[in-house]
Length: 447
Image 1 (tube, rainbow, N blue to C red):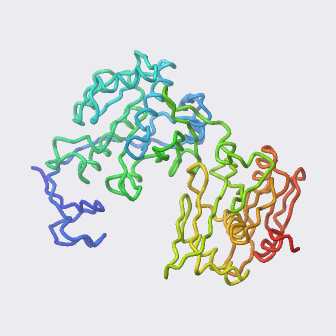
Image 2: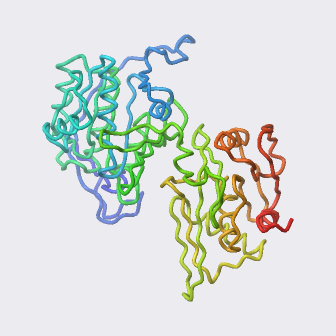
Image 3: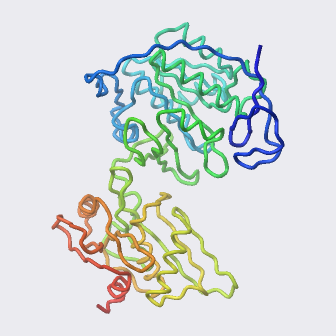
């Protein structure tokens, strides 16, 4: 006999009986009853020996594309399950077809199951990408049972791609595809099945308007790796970012360019995000930050514009970083440097469409604002990095040598960094400052 489980359609919490309000997320009228059947799974315990403490190189599938292997932590782990989220039309399906093609060329069979597109539509995309691999099988269905039965029938599949999880349904659950119960149960069944059969699982997920993968938050906890495919449909550049990885570092990024024949990896993203900054001239309000994304150093250009306004509440607009961080830096500049922006509109942008949340970018943001406010350009070929405290102190940051080596490689001559940074890289001129007042003095040539 099936059991009725009451589930919140917003947060996915379970309840023994129906209530008008979810006690976890506080949403009214979000509890629905779902008819579930128990599924018995027989497992056996295995002893962990000292010889099993490393992943065998035979269990890692390298794509031979550095940008992909970087975000996967060196390669795709056999039997892992990977969740990839992104906005509609950003290129998730294109990315997965290209990954499937790479693996198929190594004689690994792959099943591409789509609940969104027909077989003709998938084949049309594959033809455009010049993918004609017989090891890639295409399936157009939304039924979870059909997918599992086909994988069982053809025992050769090493990879399974689900596009997308919000379109897949389990017949044992009465709700429609895309609901909390369906997404969670289908994901659980797919992970359990692929783990038992040592099949690597790729799950594509749609995202909500606030940038989160649609479905219960537990979805990200169930999988081994969570990747976000970022970008803007108005430009051709895409960023694959690691949010969670049980087999490698997080916050790694891979940068790609979307062209007619698919995604092309970009091995030197710093040159992409810098633009004109690789040349020996400067622009008012433009500062270069030496950042770290995962284990990769990357140079990023901050651009700011300050203009007078007669509005009672001046506008603060930010693209690519946290607006709360900008508000804090504006307050510190006002209190410590006598730079009053209360009657000014402030616009801050990161060139190239990258998103940065590293506190070490504070110094570059402050320098960009000071330059825009004083109408004085920052000295050319200068990079900076450092965290600003509420007292105006410049705090130390990590991996300073790695940042400076990347700057030197791209032709930068001097760096503004915190005092006592223990920098050992001697090929670039170092300017150490301990508070934000000295930054203003340096930029306004009044040292």
